[in-house]
Image (cartoon, rainbow, N blue to C red; front, side, top):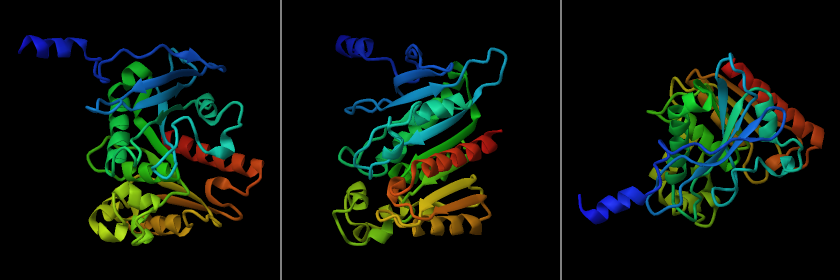
Length: 290
């Protein structure tokens, strides 16, 4: 090894698999937050990060079940801190509420479509899952009790993650108002789906199929919870209806809730109804990891 190569190795940041964890901040109710933890090393790209909310310490208790949350934003924008505009004013916030209920929750970054095309964002959430499983003994989380949850584009990625072969298995997947069939966008090259794929879905049918949860459903799929507004003007409710039907065809456990009067991101619903949907989702996850 040359002296220059040796020096480059010496000064490089530790790989995320070995890097020390940041100190945890106490955010109240015994909940601790590890913010901005790198989970992958991508040459030439800023390392993707996650925020990890950990429930109250239980010295003699079992490790905490884990929720991996994937944010929305049309694969084009969005932030891992955000579960959607209807929950931005909650105090405590939604992630703190999940942790207060006894579940760890990791909200993860992924490369957006202006940074890299599909399958890059799916590769990133897969990397996050593998990192969280690999370091679960240090984190106090249970690698055998993991559920993935996403909203909109994040729900699409959460569904694909749960249906991916060759990854640590998950106990369930939650998708709120998520696309399931990218081919439905046809030949328009300007849709979020086309920007994700690099071309109109009609022009790249192979990648469009690979990026569609509907086409990736397989026997042995984990349980799914699908929740979708019946008046969704951005991602039609039929996406979730068709995915639920396909999951049922292969014998997977699936629960579908369509919400009357709800547009995308629960627009049009009263605050208490949004809270009920959140609570329903949290109860479903707790049942999967009990």
